[in-house]
Figure (tube, rainbow, N blue to C red):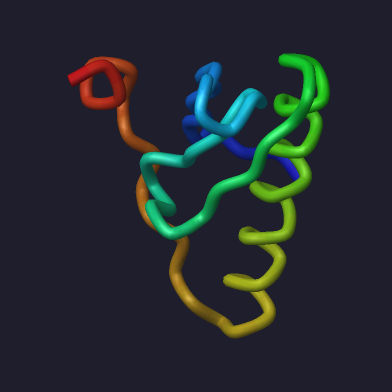
Length: 71
């Protein structure tokens, strides 16, 4: 499923993994042992979130711009 949502991937010393968060979906998170794994899992989470929203007939939030993600 195509989307233009933001995904932030950061290394977490405490978790010993790359942690992924989604500015448009603040309660969603995932992680990976490598950056590539975290990115893959992040994409899977975004796809699942969008499918759930569509199945529930909920409106998806507007994607935030890069400037807001970096703020």
